[in-house]
Image (cartoon, rainbow, N blue to C red; front, top):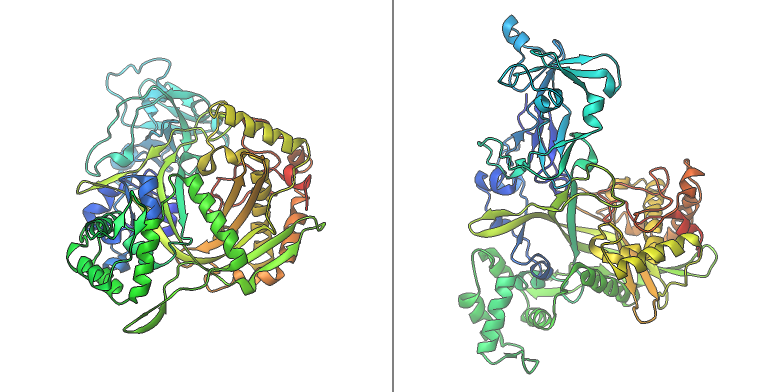
Length: 617
C-alpha cells in the first residue's frame, strides 16, 4: 500500500495546510507546520521565496515561500516530500466491534489481522483552534470513574442502529457506556493541544484550555477554515523586474546606495535616475545576495534587461508607497482595473541580448473591452478581458468553526508561522492566469439601493461603524465594507455569474475564483463596486484563453445569471430568509447562490438575493 498521497500545490494552500487532516490510502494524516514536516526534508524556503512589494507591509517580518514539488527538487514522484503524522490513531475493528489505539485484542488473541480496520471518524476541537483525539475514557466515564485504576486499553463498539444515539461505546471493565448522540451534543474539557506544532517523533503536548471542546467529524469542512490573503499584481509594479528589485532587502539596499550617491533625498522628495554604471556597480558588489536577496540566476536576468526598463522599474519602486493594509490594497487594485478597463494595460517589453521579451504580469487590451446594458438599461456594465494576470496566494492561518453558531464565523485565528534559520515563513503559491473584470460604466457610482433587505444591510454597516464588535462577526479583508448593501449586491451577482459561466461554458465551479471590490465615498455615502472573475493555478481550467473568449457574449451570460437568481429550488423558504444585523447572510443557499469555498474569498458570506432582485438594473 502506498505511504504517500499526491496533492496539488494550490490545493495545499487553498484547502489543506498545517493543522488539516488529509485522507490518504493509508489512513488519515495530519499536516504539521512546515518547520516539522517540510524543512527537515532538505527544503530551503529562501530558495522558493515569494517576495512582492505588498508582503512586507502586510506580513511584517514574515516571508512567504512557494511549496515546492518533487519535480522542482529533482526527486522521484513516489518519494514523500511533506511528512505527516497519523491522526487520529484510534481505530475501529469492524470484525470484532472494538475501538482501540494500538491493536485489536481479539485479533491479537486469534493470531489474525482483521481486513476491515477503519480509523475512527471523530475528533475533538474547540473554538480556540485546539484539536485532539476523542478522549473516549472521559466520555464513557463522565458520570462515574471506572472501577479499575488504569484506563482501559480499548472500548467495545455496539452499533444498534443507523443513528448516533443507537451507537454505544462501552467500557469492557465496568460496563459503563455512552451513546455517540450524547457525546456529540454536549461539550467536554479541552486538552489545549495543537498537534501541528508538535515534533513528529514526540508525544502529544496538552497544556489545557478554558474553552469547551466538541466532538466533530474529522472530514467536516468547519473543522478547519483556511485564512488566505491573495495579492494581484497591478500597475505601476507589474513586471518581473519590479518583483525582483522590490524584495524588502534588495529595495532597502538600493535606497541606501542611491542615498549615498546623492541620487535620493526623501526629505526633499527628490529622486534622480542612477547611471547605468552606478547601477551595475551596485548590482555586482552591494546588492544583497543569499536569504532575502537575489540569486545568481536572478542577477543574470536583471543584467540581460534593457537599462531603460531597469531605470523605470527603480523609479516606480522608490516613488511608490505600498498600501498599509488589505483594504487599501483592494482599493488600489480596483482603481487600477477601472483605469485599465478604459485605457488598457499594454504589455511591457524589454530588449536584451536574446531579443525582445514581454515582461508584464498584467495585460488588458482596450480594443477587446465591451460595454453591455443591464436587464432594464439603467446600468451599463463595462466588461474587460484580463489577458494576463499574476497572483500570489498566502495561507496565514486557520479557524475551527466548532461549537454553537455565533452569527458569523466562530473560532479564534490560529497562525501557522514556521521558523527556519531565524526567519518566519508562511506557505503560498504563485500563479499566472486570466480573468474578466466587470464594473459599472462611467463614474461607476451605484444608484441608491431600495427594499427592506438593503435597508437592513445598511443598518448592519452603520452599526459596525459605530462599534465593530457589536455585530459579533469577522468582517474579513474588506472590514465593515463587507456589510455594505452595494458590496452584497456585487457579491451576490458574482456568485450567480460563476454559476452561469459553469452552465454556459462548461467550467467547473471550483475552477473560477472571484474578487469583489468596493469603494465608499465617506463624504457623500456613495459606493461603487466591481468583480474580478479569474483562473490561476497549475492546470486550472481556462488558462489558455478560454475565459476571456467569453467576453463578446457576456451579455447573454449576464442575463442567464440574473435569471438564475430569480428562482431557487428552496423557495419560498430561501427567499423569505431575511438578513438582520449580527448575521452574515440573507436569502442565499447552496441551491441558488453559494459556490465552492475555495472560489469565494468571503467563505460564502455577505450574500442576499433579495438585495440583488429588489434592485435589478
